[in-house]
Image 1 (cartoon, rainbow, N blue to C red):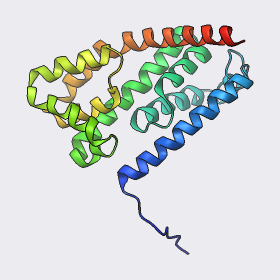
Image 2: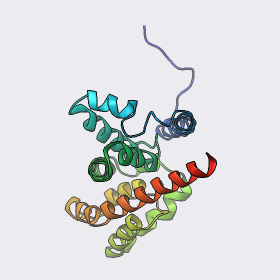
Image 3: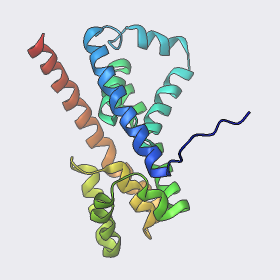
Image 4: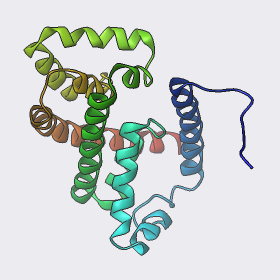
Length: 204
């Protein structure tokens, strides 16, 4: 027996639906963490769960980071802080960077393979039009991409896809990503973690 839905969703509508579900899931996670702070603390149940998985624990976490780059179900800032807390500043940074780097490469390659229709499925038309114009600026796009990876407020994951539609080589993209993302990722993770700590103290 084949299940048939009474309506059909486009790829963009499916992505938007999953994004909304991801936002609801993130709100639920925030409430759950507030009510059960020990679960995601160092030595907590989630860390014990990952530890019990052995080598598959870090692999699972890295896969989560890859997925959040490709499919915005869970905010990347949240998963980076979780990695920072669970694995410590150094190992957490390695796992966070590895997952986000792999996700960025995959996003670049998917955009290169499937083109405009694929990329447009992930953002609104206004955002797409805002950033796609940088493709016409040649070498300027590389400088813009590096700047966007360093500074906050830019849709980094989407820009990885835009880069995939450009004439930029994969090697060049990898160099820009490795030179810009790791340091800023660590900085933003530490700032987010300290900010959450301050908020927790303020409201406790």
